[in-house]
Length: 201
Image (cartoon, rainbow, N blue to C red; front, side):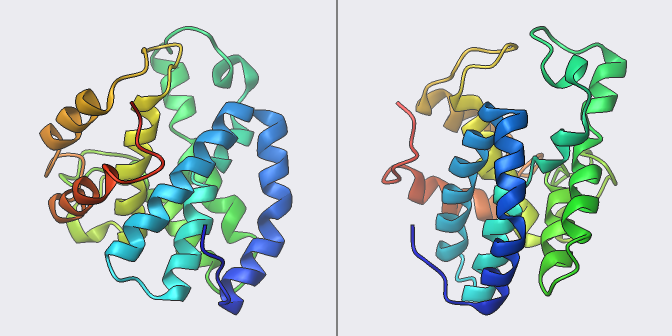
């Protein structure tokens, strides 16, 4: 992982380090997932030509895209079966909760990171949540996180699905191009993932 000298990132990182520890205690699987999402997001951001400051904000956003899960009750967060409608509605609140947590840091860059966290479940076609945004209405950071979050989530065994192979995941991602994912960003991701250390089997 390349270290960043940007002061905005360094300040945000120092204030959010405790959050990372808290998330690990709350849900270790989510914390490990977030670390992999951060690595993939940074690689995609660099391929997109983002500045060092933008990469720093992206790394914070990716690291804490699921931090809002600390506000989800254990009966939902740790449930070993599929959610019912009410539980799913509760779980979907994590993106807005995460936005509030990061925005409360009140440092340069925290607003952009908080926005990406709020928007990382928006769909390119406007049918995601929580705000039903589409296309360029969704921040670039969030559109990057959506792709890499989807990839890593499908690569891991969850209570509601088995781990998928790389080929299976890529077939699903390509089918979601223009629906869930930004087509241009997805193509860049497809070009880089084969050589990534985060590529699944």
